[in-house]
Length: 484
Image (tube, rainbow, N blue to C red; front, side):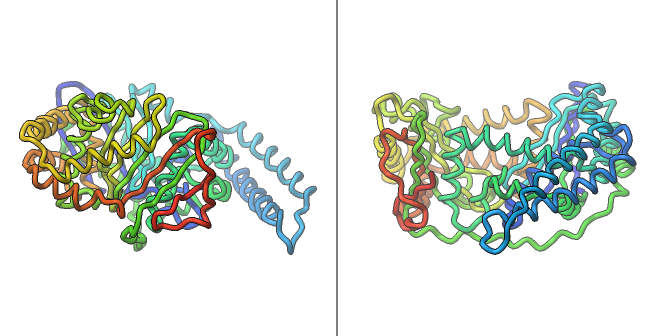
């Protein structure tokens, strides 16, 4: 386990941030969402927490797994020209599953781990799954550090994936709320799936619905055993600690958890884009526009110039009046209500993304052309000295904001240690960003912001949009793609 520690004795608290080097990019084919599902299951307890009688639970979970396997096999026959599903058997298995799950509930103590943290003074206990990693975090009183180590070591060494199939339904509901019935979430999913044709960044971290349906407890447990080992984790502790004592605690509780040999990860590289890609989502909602350009991963020599370009476009904060997008699209041309831009921070090549919301009576096409006009200015004219000074000042301000909270420091240095290879990136980034020249900004604007390297996603109300082209009739060379 890589351990990063920052002493800050201004308050008797400590931020604890554990990141596992596994995320959506590691989901096997046909199993999208498995990393995210595992994150959910890590809150279901252990033989020590979350149960009134673990020994009584074990045979019930095995029976539930067996009943589900039989049910899935029978359901797979539905629609098959070679087999006929036994509807009576399906109904019987469903009833059996419900009965077994109700029996298991008698022994489950819901949310016991979370409630234990709360009683100990823990704040903000949560987790998140991203494309590149999965992280678990909480802020604790510093005098409870040893209890945290005991609880987390138990969770990593001995998780129990109880209520798996009920939690799978929870994940389905999460997807429904954030994506399927959320126009911005749906547009984002279409946008990523269009921008990436080969790399797994095209897949939704939450998973495709049919893939979520197919996940089993055994599969998620095997995924856990593969990736959730100390040698595949970064632990960052920031706050009221004494490093030598902290290391001793970690060795006491985590030292006995065995390392796991990590599989060779062959991530399909995204081929160079050969033409503009477009996708239109017809949805009765506020129009939106996403534009993405492929860029190198975090830590590349062009990262800082791309960050500076994002600062020039957006200003110090989103929708800042000093940003070119706000001045040009919102104030001058009045075609947009808001606009934003940023370079994705990631382990693999990703996107520089520009988003905008058209003003009332304005079309996404008008907003799109106004954005291209701002990009063209950067390609043809050097940013002014005053603008570059604002970029340097913004770098200082961003650095100060990052250091305000223990959890903020923990989150940033953990992620940057992973994606950039060095926790010191937090500090070197500031100086390198401040040293970016106007010429370097112009150079990346010319290099990456071309029509060939561009993906555009539009959300249009159904009443105003053209008929969509089915996906099988589209190509990656500039034709409009439709997915609705």
